[in-house]
Image (tube, rainbow, N blue to C red):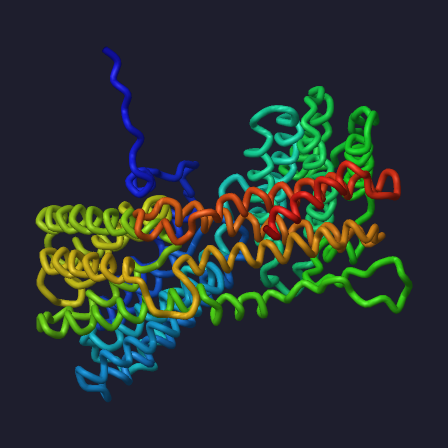
Length: 617
C-alpha cells in the first residue's frame, strides 16, 4: 500500500531551505583578514577591550559583505557601520545617565524609531538593527573606553573590512579589477535575457522572466553606487554602463516574446549569448546573427541587437555612462509641449520615507519597541552580568527579512545551542589566549558562507561572540548565551503574534509593497498608452514596475510562510500580485507593438482594461 507523504508546513519548509551557490572565496579571505589581525594588534598593545570593539565592527561589516560590486558595498557596509558607531555613543551615554526603569522606556523609544526606519529598505534595515544592537552593547558591556572611543574603534573594524573589500581583487576578475563585480552583474543580465528567449512558449517562461528581473535589479544596484576613484569614469566603465543600457530594450523584447507564448528557434538567443560572452571577457562581440523578423517582438529584438552591437563595438561616448539610469521620469502625452504630466514617480528618498512612516513602519516599529523594551526589562530582573544579550538577541529575531517568525525563532534556537556546544568543545581543545583568537579568525572567514542560512549564521556568530568574551578576560558563558537566546525567542514569539492596536492592519509591510508596486505599474501603463516617444523613460518606468513587483512578491512569500495566525493577515495579496504582473507583462508587449505600428493594438487594450478592472474590484 502506497503512503503519501504530507508536505511540510511552510514555516518548517522555510527553516530547512538553504541557499545554494559557489563559495565566495574572496569574502572568506576578507573575513579571515578582518577581525583577527585587529584583535591580535590590540592584544599586543595591551588593549584587549579595544580589540573586542574593533572585532565587533568587523563582524557586523562581514555580515553585510554580500556579493556584488565594490561601489554597492560602500553604502551597504558603510551606512550600517556609521549607525552602529552612533548607537555606541548613545548607548554609553544612556547607560551612565538612566536608571533601570528609565532604561526600559529609552529602549522602547529607540526600538520604535529603529524599527520604523528598518521598513524603508535593505540598507535601512541593516542601519536600524545595527543602531539598536550597538545601543544595547554600549549600555551593558563593561568597557573602559569612553563613548566616542568605542565609536571610533567600531568604525576602525568596519572600515578595515571595507578597505579590504575595495582593494583586494576578486578571483577570476576580467579587465579592470575595480569593476569586476559590475561586469559579472551585466553578464548575468544578458544570460538571463537569452534564457527567457529560449523559454518562450514553455511553462518555464514565467520563472525565467522573474530571474531576468532579479538580474536587472542586481546590475542596477551594482552600477549605481558611489565612484571609488577620482578618474573611475574610464572607457571600460562607460562601455559597461552602455552595455547595461543596451540590455533594457532586449529585456523588453524578450518579455514580449514570452508573453506571446510561441516557441522560438535556437537562433533567436544565439546573439544574446554572444553578447553575454563579450561582457564576461571584456572583448568585442563581433558579428551577431539576426533573428527572423516575422512579428513585432522579433523585429524589436533584432533592432535591439543592432543597437547593442554598437554599444559593444562602437565608440564610447560620455553620456553612455548615464543612459537608462534616470530615476525621475515625467510622462507626457502628445497633446503638446504644455501638457501636464500624467504621472510622476516619487524619488527614492520619498518612497523610503513613506515606508518608514506608513503602516509597515509603524507596525514593525511597535513590535521592535515591545521586543527591545521587554527584553531589557526581563534581563534586568534576572540580574545577569550580560543582561544586554537578551534585548540585542530580540532585535535580531524580530527582523522579518530574515524569514518567517517561527522559522527564524527555530533557526536561532538551534543555531545558538549548536554554536555554544561547538565553542565549548573548541575552547577545551584550544586553551590559552591564542585559542579564542583563532576562533575569531575562523568565525570571520565562515560568516560570508554562513549568511546563506540563519541557523548557520547564528552558530558562527555565537562562536565568534563567545570567543570575544574570553579575549576580554571573562569566563566561558556558553550556557548563559543559550538561556538568554531561548528567553528572547519566547518574547519575540509572543510579540510577533500580538494583535497590535496600531494604525493599519497586520501585514502592513506586504500591503505597502503592493501599493508601491501598483503605483509603479499604473505609471508604466499610462506612459505606454500615451504612445510617448520617450523610450528611455519607458524603460526606466518598466524597471521600476518590475522591481517593485519583485519586492512585493518577496514580502508575500515570506508572509505566506508564517504561522496561520500571522499569515491570515495577508490572505489574497498573492492574487493581487499575479494580476499586477500580468498587467506589466501585457503592457510590455503592448509597448513593443506601439513601436512597430504606432498604435495600441486592440487585443492589448482590451486585456489591459480587463486587468485594471480586476485590480479596481
